[in-house]
Image (cartoon, rainbow, N blue to C red):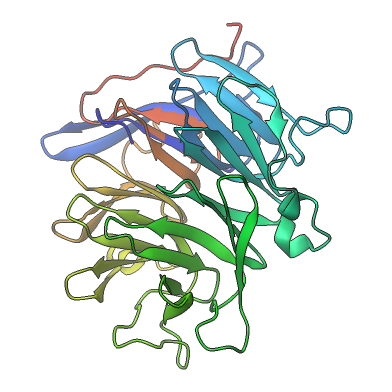
Length: 375
């Protein structure tokens, strides 16, 4: 979300554009469907997995069929695809995750294509990490998460485990699940984050949360599954971790797939659970993405419940947009499934949904339809 409150959303089937407004304490979401001159949806029915802004305020959209670079100012877009004839292009069209390092460029994690790197000022993509992209093991090529810390070392989460690379992109350490004490709980690493206290957190698919002890290189495990939790404080959400996000007060929020968000208090070293799914009355929802605004509100994109705002002060979630709610569709075809949420520097919130692509400008009541380039 941007500083002015705009939300960007990537969806399962492309793009929508709309506005979020508030009047007399009631929040309304109005959606405009983005179409070209022929009435076709922008980006068609492409599923969107990840959104990130670069230093030039261009929005990178990772989809299941290539990479789109969108300029909100000129409303232009550039589509990039993996082609056998282009050895310096993308090596896979299914983009799982994107990470922007302001000092170097954009990291692109793909499905069984490894990691691509886009250097600032250079259009061609570089295969900086052949250890992953050229591995014979498909689990290593399946990149689920990418993270770069203040020391500029790159961390890559795959179906195999966690890999740490030097600034020169040489493999320094690989962590995987094994019978040894202190190993990674499972192989699938879906989220990586270093908090303000330099605690290094690793989220997994099915193995809960792992906290890396820098002294001995072992992991402390937090899980709600019997026999897997090795601490005094139990993670109360499910063990499939979507993301970590930290608020201005230093609380770490652990976003779990099946509708639960855990707040980690660094002072008490304990978790507090918020059962978002139960509180909004959507027990079958799945959380797909999250971002945080300047007021520390969490914005959750989900399947089965649409867009949810979680007030981190009151710990109360609110259903913002979902089927059956007044003014949700506004006679347009925005689907309920929201797969990506991103708030840009201007406080605009962008959403990737199961319909199209949406730019929401909360509270001020303004909106602008994004036309197809060339209109």
